[in-house]
Length: 134
Image (tube, rainbow, N blue to C red; front, side, top):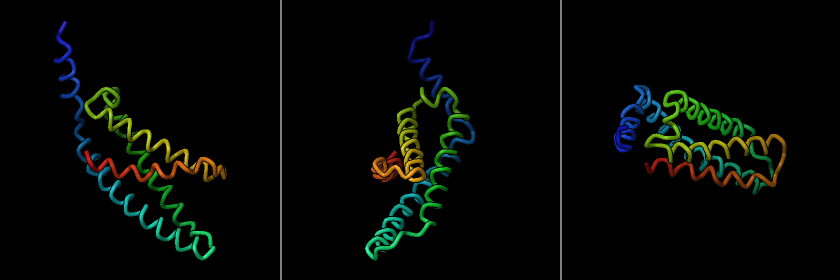
């Protein structure tokens, strides 16, 4: 049997699907836009809350669009990399992405069902910006 080192090198060589660089570029742009949006969302929400008003609904709609986009990104990566999504060289970042997307989905469900005790998961969204560090 071939040594394990060659096996892992083979997996890493196969990992790069031709569309992956474009998806990674799109992901970076999406992360940057989402980071800016989180700042805008916080600023607008605070202004409304300080006046005793409910923040505008468009903030939730834009947030839902971002959650859907990040969910589609994960789905695309899983489809293109298949098993290498959890075994390849980016497996740690992929799992990190999955956790962030899952917490965002849970957050959206808690908002829809008015489960306020779980809304603390929103703080985890700010961590998404850490993905830019890779």
